[in-house]
Length: 310
Image (tube, rainbow, N blue to C red):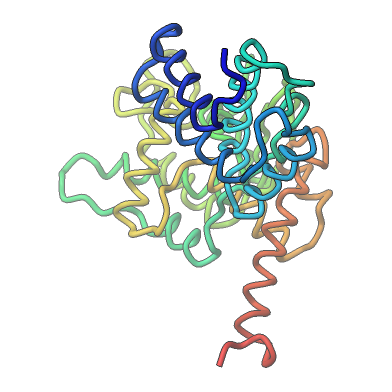
C-alpha cells in the first residue's frame, strides 16, 4: 500500500477497516474517529512512523493535565494501540509507540459523608405519614437509622441483629451496657458503643415490635413479620431522606461513612475508629483522614482572615 498516504488518509482507512471488516457499530467507529482526530492534533506534523513511545507518553500527560478522567485516557490509549497494530501491517513501523504506555492511576473516590447537622437531622426527624397503620414502621425506621449512625454498622450487620442473644445469633443489642455486638466480615465479632438517642429509639421500637413470623428472633422485622432485608432498609432510608429534605441520595453506607468521619473529626483516634468499623487493616480506615482534612480545609477557608475571599 502507499506509504506516502497522509495521516488523515491512514486514519480513514483504519476506520473503514473497523466498519467493513470488523463490523463495528457506527457509534463505536465514531468514538474511534474522535480519538484518532485527537491523536492527529496532538502529534502535529509528525508522521505516523516517526511517533515514539515518549511522544505518546507526553500526549497522555497532556490529556491528564487537562483533567481528563484516567478511564477516558485509558480508552484513548487502547484505541491508539489498536490503530498502530493495524498500521504495522500496512507500512513499516519500528515499534508500536503506544505499547507499554499506561494511563494515570485512578484515584480512589472518597466516601460520601453527610455533614453533622444533616446526619443528625436525618436520623432524628422521623418521617411523618398520614396513613394509619404505618406508625410502627416509622418507629422501626427511626430505630434502624439511629443505630446505623450511632454505631457505624454495615446494613447487613443491622439486618442480622437479634432482639436477644441466642443460638446462632449474628449480633444483638446489650442495652444495659450501651453496646451492640455484631458479626462482621470474616465472621469476626466486635462490640461497638451505642448512643443514648439510638437506645431510646430501639426501646420505643421494642414496645411496638410484633413477634416475628419466620421463627427468628430478629430485632427488626418487616411489615410481613419477617426479618428485614438489607434492601428494604436501603429503600426505607432513601425514602426517609427525600422526605427529610437531605441534600444527598442517602444510603446506609453513607451513614457508616458519616459515623466514621464525625468520630474522627472529634477524637482524632484512627485506631478507635478502625476497631469500631471492624476494619482488618488500618489502611481501609485512613481514607477518612482525607474527609477530616476536607472538613478542616472548609473551616479554614471560612474562618481564617487571610483565607476569606474579598
